[in-house]
Image (cartoon, rainbow, N blue to C red):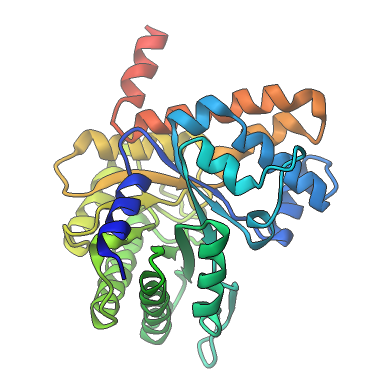
Length: 341
């Protein structure tokens, strides 16, 4: 393990003014997104769409620090024969790869899941490193409902995350550790805070036990937010304050950065919450983004599978990336107010 290299890569992933593009949708997930805009999910269409993102020069150079890829994408080449990984590197961003194999029901824990993919991971990481990946991602999913999450589910997922992270560092690949507490339920923000704190404390205990070096990783958590079905939705300020409180209680200062997932929030909500947290400040880690839908919904709609819409899609992507880049420095709300006033 080359700790200096891991630390340098992790620092590059969370540098001020930039964040991570999550372009690692599985074939099934991106098909749903393409169905919504009337585009057939073929390998060429998936390639063309992601290529237009990676060739969005202003966004990639100024607002994107890294890109999480899917197994298919890391192997694809652009229309001119350039590997997509090279397009990302040429823009100054770090290529990464999703390595988990998705979730399956956790035995004897109704309504809960475990993320699979540890078998053969060392060999897959070696291959991905050869293909250009310098970081990886593994997502654990924790639901909130009556009687869940259970200790069994939280412990099992935290242990898998830690084992994955250790295997990554062994291969000089920075692990993104992603324990996502879902926002799909009817729980209020306080319930989310309690569960998120429980999950994060368990994850960091497991990371310690697996000897993961914190300076060489990036945390990708959910924000502390009320469930979508909750009758009381919290304000931007409350989300920011409660998220920061939980993180201060759980995340060691040695972690270089926290790249939040959007978790189904709207584009504007995800940006506003990140901005509010950075305006609070006073924390030892960089606070940035690792967004999928919150960066891609607008460009996907603008593109709609038509070559003549590529420039419009790139403008939409550049705008969303820039807004989130401003939010990483706590400057988004101020710029918005200046533009209006």
